Length: 313
Figure (cartoon, rainbow, N blue to C red):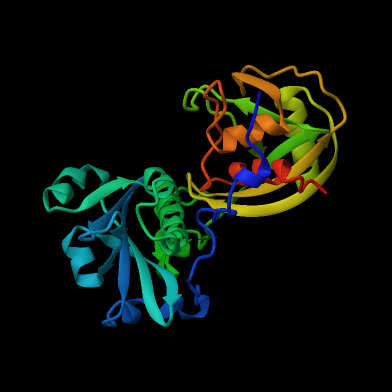
Protein backbone atom coordinates (compact mmCIF):
# COMPACT_ATOMS: atom_id res chain seq x y z
CA UNK A 1 0.00 0.00 0.00
CA UNK A 2 1.47 3.35 -1.02
CA UNK A 3 0.45 6.41 0.96
CA UNK A 4 2.59 9.11 -0.68
CA UNK A 5 0.78 11.50 -3.01
CA UNK A 6 1.53 14.67 -4.93
CA UNK A 7 -0.02 16.71 -2.09
CA UNK A 8 2.71 15.47 0.27
CA UNK A 9 5.62 16.53 -1.90
CA UNK A 10 5.77 20.11 -0.64
CA UNK A 11 7.04 23.14 -2.60
CA UNK A 12 8.71 22.42 -5.91
CA UNK A 13 12.49 22.37 -5.27
CA UNK A 14 15.10 24.31 -7.23
CA UNK A 15 16.86 22.57 -10.12
CA UNK A 16 20.63 22.42 -9.70
CA UNK A 17 23.11 24.42 -11.84
CA UNK A 18 20.38 26.72 -13.16
CA UNK A 19 19.43 30.34 -12.39
CA UNK A 20 23.02 31.57 -12.60
CA UNK A 21 23.42 35.19 -11.42
CA UNK A 22 26.12 35.87 -14.01
CA UNK A 23 26.06 38.17 -16.99
CA UNK A 24 28.50 36.30 -19.23
CA UNK A 25 29.70 39.64 -20.66
CA UNK A 26 31.11 37.94 -23.76
CA UNK A 27 32.11 41.26 -25.31
CA UNK A 28 34.45 41.92 -22.37
CA UNK A 29 36.42 38.69 -22.52
CA UNK A 30 39.29 40.53 -24.18
CA UNK A 31 39.51 42.69 -21.03
CA UNK A 32 39.82 39.71 -18.68
CA UNK A 33 43.38 40.50 -17.55
CA UNK A 34 42.36 44.01 -16.47
CA UNK A 35 39.11 42.78 -14.92
CA UNK A 36 41.07 40.29 -12.81
CA UNK A 37 42.93 43.23 -11.24
CA UNK A 38 39.76 44.87 -9.96
CA UNK A 39 39.40 44.77 -6.17
CA UNK A 40 35.94 43.21 -6.45
CA UNK A 41 37.11 40.37 -8.70
CA UNK A 42 36.53 36.93 -7.21
CA UNK A 43 37.34 33.39 -8.29
CA UNK A 44 36.13 29.83 -7.87
CA UNK A 45 38.94 27.33 -7.36
CA UNK A 46 38.53 23.95 -9.06
CA UNK A 47 40.69 20.88 -9.53
CA UNK A 48 39.08 18.33 -11.85
CA UNK A 49 35.98 17.20 -9.94
CA UNK A 50 37.00 19.11 -6.82
CA UNK A 51 35.82 22.50 -5.57
CA UNK A 52 37.52 24.46 -2.79
CA UNK A 53 35.60 26.57 -0.27
CA UNK A 54 36.02 28.23 3.11
CA UNK A 55 33.98 26.98 6.07
CA UNK A 56 31.64 29.66 7.41
CA UNK A 57 31.49 29.89 11.20
CA UNK A 58 28.12 28.84 12.59
CA UNK A 59 26.76 27.82 9.19
CA UNK A 60 26.24 24.47 7.46
CA UNK A 61 27.32 25.91 4.11
CA UNK A 62 30.65 27.07 2.68
CA UNK A 63 31.93 30.09 0.75
CA UNK A 64 33.53 29.07 -2.57
CA UNK A 65 34.56 32.58 -3.68
CA UNK A 66 38.13 33.80 -3.13
CA UNK A 67 39.73 37.11 -3.96
CA UNK A 68 42.16 36.80 -6.85
CA UNK A 69 45.42 37.07 -4.83
CA UNK A 70 44.24 34.36 -2.43
CA UNK A 71 43.11 32.09 -5.25
CA UNK A 72 46.55 32.37 -6.84
CA UNK A 73 48.33 31.79 -3.51
CA UNK A 74 46.33 28.58 -3.14
CA UNK A 75 47.71 27.35 -6.47
CA UNK A 76 45.04 28.58 -8.87
CA UNK A 77 46.19 29.12 -12.46
CA UNK A 78 44.76 29.67 -15.96
CA UNK A 79 41.96 32.10 -15.07
CA UNK A 80 38.75 31.51 -17.02
CA UNK A 81 36.49 34.56 -17.23
CA UNK A 82 32.95 33.49 -16.30
CA UNK A 83 31.25 36.87 -16.43
CA UNK A 84 30.01 39.60 -14.10
CA UNK A 85 27.86 39.33 -10.99
CA UNK A 86 26.28 42.72 -10.30
CA UNK A 87 29.20 44.23 -12.21
CA UNK A 88 31.88 42.34 -10.26
CA UNK A 89 34.17 40.04 -12.30
CA UNK A 90 33.99 36.30 -11.65
CA UNK A 91 36.64 33.78 -12.70
CA UNK A 92 37.38 30.10 -12.45
CA UNK A 93 40.95 29.10 -11.57
CA UNK A 94 42.24 25.55 -11.73
CA UNK A 95 44.64 23.63 -9.51
CA UNK A 96 46.10 20.09 -9.66
CA UNK A 97 43.69 17.67 -7.92
CA UNK A 98 46.64 16.10 -6.09
CA UNK A 99 46.89 19.34 -4.08
CA UNK A 100 43.74 18.41 -2.16
CA UNK A 101 45.50 17.37 1.04
CA UNK A 102 47.69 20.52 1.30
CA UNK A 103 44.57 22.65 0.82
CA UNK A 104 42.66 20.73 3.48
CA UNK A 105 45.66 21.13 5.78
CA UNK A 106 45.09 24.88 5.52
CA UNK A 107 41.59 24.40 6.97
CA UNK A 108 39.80 24.64 3.64
CA UNK A 109 36.84 22.51 2.60
CA UNK A 110 37.49 20.42 -0.53
CA UNK A 111 34.92 18.11 -2.08
CA UNK A 112 33.59 16.99 -5.44
CA UNK A 113 30.87 19.04 -7.12
CA UNK A 114 28.25 16.27 -7.05
CA UNK A 115 28.54 15.94 -3.26
CA UNK A 116 28.49 19.70 -2.82
CA UNK A 117 25.37 20.13 -4.97
CA UNK A 118 23.43 17.20 -3.50
CA UNK A 119 24.34 18.23 0.05
CA UNK A 120 23.55 21.94 -0.46
CA UNK A 121 27.04 22.75 0.82
CA UNK A 122 27.18 26.10 -0.99
CA UNK A 123 24.48 28.67 -1.69
CA UNK A 124 22.44 27.73 -4.81
CA UNK A 125 23.56 30.87 -6.69
CA UNK A 126 27.10 29.47 -6.85
CA UNK A 127 26.19 26.20 -8.59
CA UNK A 128 25.66 27.70 -12.05
CA UNK A 129 28.98 29.59 -12.15
CA UNK A 130 30.84 26.61 -10.70
CA UNK A 131 29.26 24.33 -13.31
CA UNK A 132 30.40 26.72 -16.05
CA UNK A 133 33.96 26.85 -14.67
CA UNK A 134 34.15 23.08 -14.23
CA UNK A 135 32.87 22.32 -17.74
CA UNK A 136 35.15 24.90 -19.32
CA UNK A 137 38.16 23.61 -17.38
CA UNK A 138 37.38 20.05 -18.47
CA UNK A 139 37.25 21.16 -22.09
CA UNK A 140 40.70 22.76 -21.87
CA UNK A 141 42.12 19.65 -20.22
CA UNK A 142 40.91 17.48 -23.12
CA UNK A 143 41.57 19.86 -26.03
CA UNK A 144 45.14 21.01 -25.66
CA UNK A 145 46.03 19.94 -29.20
CA UNK A 146 44.66 21.07 -32.55
CA UNK A 147 42.22 18.56 -34.00
CA UNK A 148 43.31 19.66 -37.50
CA UNK A 149 47.09 19.22 -37.27
CA UNK A 150 47.96 18.06 -33.74
CA UNK A 151 49.91 21.19 -32.73
CA UNK A 152 49.58 22.37 -29.10
CA UNK A 153 47.00 25.17 -28.95
CA UNK A 154 46.89 28.40 -26.94
CA UNK A 155 44.09 29.59 -24.69
CA UNK A 156 42.48 32.77 -26.06
CA UNK A 157 39.54 35.00 -25.10
CA UNK A 158 39.89 34.31 -21.37
CA UNK A 159 39.30 30.60 -21.87
CA UNK A 160 36.53 30.69 -24.48
CA UNK A 161 38.70 29.74 -27.45
CA UNK A 162 41.90 27.84 -28.27
CA UNK A 163 43.97 28.85 -31.29
CA UNK A 164 46.45 26.78 -33.23
CA UNK A 165 49.69 28.68 -34.00
CA UNK A 166 50.49 26.30 -36.85
CA UNK A 167 47.39 25.97 -39.04
CA UNK A 168 45.40 28.91 -37.66
CA UNK A 169 42.54 26.70 -36.52
CA UNK A 170 40.18 28.14 -33.92
CA UNK A 171 38.52 25.81 -31.44
CA UNK A 172 35.54 26.67 -29.25
CA UNK A 173 34.04 24.91 -26.23
CA UNK A 174 31.18 22.58 -27.07
CA UNK A 175 28.27 21.25 -25.03
CA UNK A 176 27.04 17.70 -25.59
CA UNK A 177 23.23 17.54 -25.95
CA UNK A 178 21.66 14.69 -23.98
CA UNK A 179 17.98 13.75 -23.93
CA UNK A 180 16.63 12.57 -20.60
CA UNK A 181 13.05 11.36 -20.64
CA UNK A 182 10.33 10.16 -18.35
CA UNK A 183 8.27 7.72 -20.41
CA UNK A 184 4.75 7.04 -19.17
CA UNK A 185 1.54 5.28 -20.10
CA UNK A 186 -1.64 5.92 -18.15
CA UNK A 187 -0.83 5.77 -14.44
CA UNK A 188 2.62 4.20 -14.85
CA UNK A 189 6.08 5.53 -15.65
CA UNK A 190 9.21 3.78 -16.89
CA UNK A 191 12.38 3.95 -14.80
CA UNK A 192 15.70 2.18 -15.22
CA UNK A 193 18.86 1.31 -13.33
CA UNK A 194 22.47 1.42 -14.43
CA UNK A 195 25.13 -0.66 -12.62
CA UNK A 196 26.88 2.50 -11.40
CA UNK A 197 23.75 3.74 -9.57
CA UNK A 198 23.55 3.67 -5.79
CA UNK A 199 21.69 0.57 -4.55
CA UNK A 200 17.90 0.96 -4.83
CA UNK A 201 18.06 4.14 -6.94
CA UNK A 202 16.01 4.27 -10.14
CA UNK A 203 15.98 7.08 -12.68
CA UNK A 204 14.87 8.29 -16.09
CA UNK A 205 16.44 6.91 -19.26
CA UNK A 206 18.89 9.17 -21.09
CA UNK A 207 21.23 9.25 -24.05
CA UNK A 208 23.23 11.51 -26.34
CA UNK A 209 21.60 13.19 -29.31
CA UNK A 210 23.21 11.91 -32.50
CA UNK A 211 24.25 14.09 -35.49
CA UNK A 212 21.33 15.01 -37.73
CA UNK A 213 18.77 13.96 -35.12
CA UNK A 214 15.93 15.94 -33.58
CA UNK A 215 15.31 15.94 -29.84
CA UNK A 216 12.06 14.02 -30.37
CA UNK A 217 13.76 11.39 -32.51
CA UNK A 218 16.54 10.98 -29.94
CA UNK A 219 13.98 10.41 -27.18
CA UNK A 220 12.20 7.75 -29.23
CA UNK A 221 15.41 6.05 -30.37
CA UNK A 222 17.04 5.91 -26.93
CA UNK A 223 13.89 4.62 -25.22
CA UNK A 224 13.51 1.90 -27.84
CA UNK A 225 17.22 0.96 -27.78
CA UNK A 226 17.57 0.85 -24.00
CA UNK A 227 14.22 -0.58 -22.91
CA UNK A 228 12.47 -1.85 -26.05
CA UNK A 229 9.60 0.61 -25.51
CA UNK A 230 8.13 2.45 -28.50
CA UNK A 231 6.97 6.00 -27.85
CA UNK A 232 4.72 8.43 -29.68
CA UNK A 233 4.14 11.96 -28.40
CA UNK A 234 7.19 13.70 -26.94
CA UNK A 235 6.86 16.94 -24.96
CA UNK A 236 9.79 19.17 -24.02
CA UNK A 237 9.89 20.09 -20.32
CA UNK A 238 13.12 21.95 -19.39
CA UNK A 239 16.90 21.83 -19.66
CA UNK A 240 19.75 21.62 -17.19
CA UNK A 241 23.50 22.24 -17.58
CA UNK A 242 25.24 19.07 -16.41
CA UNK A 243 28.99 19.60 -15.88
CA UNK A 244 30.01 15.92 -15.90
CA UNK A 245 31.91 16.76 -17.94
CA UNK A 246 29.97 19.23 -20.13
CA UNK A 247 26.47 18.24 -21.20
CA UNK A 248 23.10 19.92 -21.59
CA UNK A 249 20.34 17.68 -20.30
CA UNK A 250 17.18 18.16 -22.38
CA UNK A 251 14.29 17.00 -20.23
CA UNK A 252 11.26 15.50 -21.97
CA UNK A 253 8.11 13.55 -21.22
CA UNK A 254 7.27 10.76 -23.66
CA UNK A 255 4.05 8.76 -24.07
CA UNK A 256 4.58 5.04 -24.57
CA UNK A 257 2.74 3.12 -27.29
CA UNK A 258 4.05 -0.28 -26.16
CA UNK A 259 4.66 -1.74 -22.70
CA UNK A 260 6.75 -4.91 -23.03
CA UNK A 261 10.24 -4.15 -21.71
CA UNK A 262 13.34 -5.62 -23.37
CA UNK A 263 16.46 -4.02 -21.91
CA UNK A 264 19.82 -3.54 -23.53
CA UNK A 265 22.15 -5.11 -20.91
CA UNK A 266 25.03 -2.96 -22.11
CA UNK A 267 23.03 0.16 -21.11
CA UNK A 268 20.78 -0.90 -18.27
CA UNK A 269 20.88 -3.30 -15.36
CA UNK A 270 17.10 -3.25 -15.10
CA UNK A 271 13.98 -1.36 -16.15
CA UNK A 272 10.39 -1.56 -14.95
CA UNK A 273 7.07 0.26 -14.77
CA UNK A 274 6.17 2.10 -11.57
CA UNK A 275 2.74 3.38 -10.59
CA UNK A 276 2.19 7.06 -9.88
CA UNK A 277 1.83 6.25 -6.16
CA UNK A 278 5.13 4.33 -6.18
CA UNK A 279 6.90 7.21 -7.94
CA UNK A 280 5.54 9.64 -5.34
CA UNK A 281 6.85 7.41 -2.55
CA UNK A 282 10.25 7.23 -4.24
CA UNK A 283 10.39 11.02 -4.46
CA UNK A 284 9.82 11.30 -0.71
CA UNK A 285 11.99 8.26 0.08
CA UNK A 286 9.07 6.49 1.76
CA UNK A 287 8.83 3.53 -0.63
CA UNK A 288 8.33 0.37 1.47
CA UNK A 289 11.15 -1.39 -0.41
CA UNK A 290 13.54 1.49 0.12
CA UNK A 291 13.55 2.47 -3.56
CA UNK A 292 14.25 6.10 -4.42
CA UNK A 293 14.98 8.46 -7.32
CA UNK A 294 17.71 11.08 -7.83
CA UNK A 295 17.67 14.15 -5.56
CA UNK A 296 16.15 17.52 -6.53
CA UNK A 297 19.47 18.79 -7.88
CA UNK A 298 19.00 16.46 -10.88
CA UNK A 299 16.50 17.02 -13.69
CA UNK A 300 15.33 13.39 -13.42
CA UNK A 301 13.74 14.25 -10.07
CA UNK A 302 11.78 17.08 -11.68
CA UNK A 303 10.59 14.96 -14.61
CA UNK A 304 9.34 12.26 -12.25
CA UNK A 305 7.61 14.86 -10.11
CA UNK A 306 5.95 16.34 -13.19
CA UNK A 307 4.46 12.91 -13.91
CA UNK A 308 3.35 12.47 -10.30
CA UNK A 309 1.70 15.90 -10.40
CA UNK A 310 -0.10 15.00 -13.64
CA UNK A 311 1.86 17.52 -15.73
CA UNK A 312 2.28 15.28 -18.77
CA UNK A 313 0.52 17.33 -21.47
